Image (cartoon, rainbow over all chains, first blue to last red; front, side):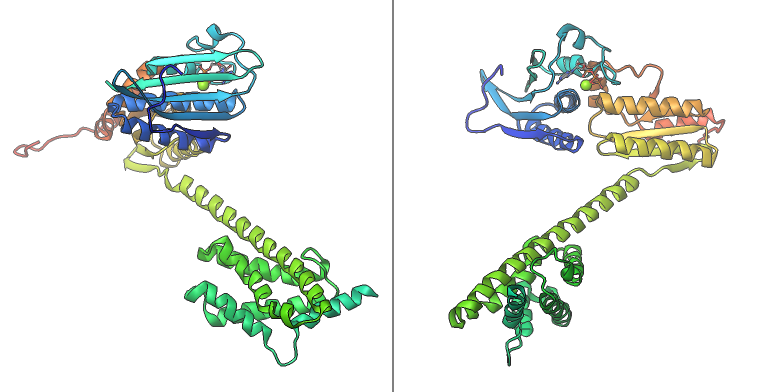
Length: 140
Length: 283
Ligand SMILES: Nc1ncnc2c1ncn2[C@@H]1O[C@H](COP(=O)(O)OP(=O)(O)OP(=O)(O)O)[C@@H](O)[C@H]1O
Ligand SMILES: [Mg+2]
């Protein structure tokens, strides 16, 4: 995490175990994005980034969870989400972050695209140790 | 022959001379369900169940899975299914069984040691039956949910004919793999059925387009092309347009229009239809 969770508003944990869970996560992120007064464009970007990362957690990480909530720093408000799995990890991060590279049948744009959609992006992973991706979008 | 005695004890509990225990049972259940199940219906249901239970016990059944209980299980399944369909909760469903324990409780105060033992034994049987109702109840609920999900899948993806040779699918909500598969099949089938060469996919009602949705759209469009039809995607909101660009998805060789109206105009022009505004009519 780059910024602390906003005081008095605990983040919530959502499981990522089946594709139906992605719908709930998108809805939860939308509600948080509205609460922190993100513009419509930024709401859509944050929801889309969350959708990408949650699907990666499900498909490549073999499932996991996301912790999502409001964050605040220097008088600014934002939404943060931390996606965690204990799957195989990503052996070559540079390759995974390359536009168009996929080990499955995707477009290979989820990870690299998600980074462009948010303000803060952090990827922690090691082979055999799982993957954690943290993202934040700040209200302007 | 301990087993025979045992059966006789259990049956004895349920058939007390001069007492209509079944009626007491119906009253007890009726009190907890209120007027949502008709008394006559409840009376019929529970008396049938009561008779079947006494029969099964007489034949030596000692738990819910016993062969002699098959009639009881069938009746309980029917009862649970009805309750699930009528919108009762699992508790309200299982109470039909557990209330019988309440009805028999006086035996604990007035009865002999053997009768108390029989009560406990019967209690175990009834617990098993109660759990069985909950099982059947949730099975029915699952079936209902699955059926509804399937209906929704169908409902939410109508293919409409806008003009001779022009069809459209308005997409609403989230596009997962299952739904997209349905949309794609319906769209391609409609192209064949109507002999259309123009298809419009309207995504005004889609809240977010991520790589998966985009990939599904791209595949559908390619498949339509292979069938000699042209697809236009309409209803891309400014926020979705910006998100698609930031994600890096290339929609380059796909024709997009801001609104369904614009997409229709284009499709008509391509199929050789001219739209003419009459003189004197303000546009
Ligand atoms: N949580 C994860 N655990 C293990 N590997 C991952 C994880 N997330 C991503 N990867 C790897 O990184 C690659 C790139 O991910 P990215 O999301 O960019 O593309 P994709 O999922 O293959 O396609 P799409 O464009 O549909 O998202 C994946 O193909 C996968 O090999
Ligand atoms: Mg992905």
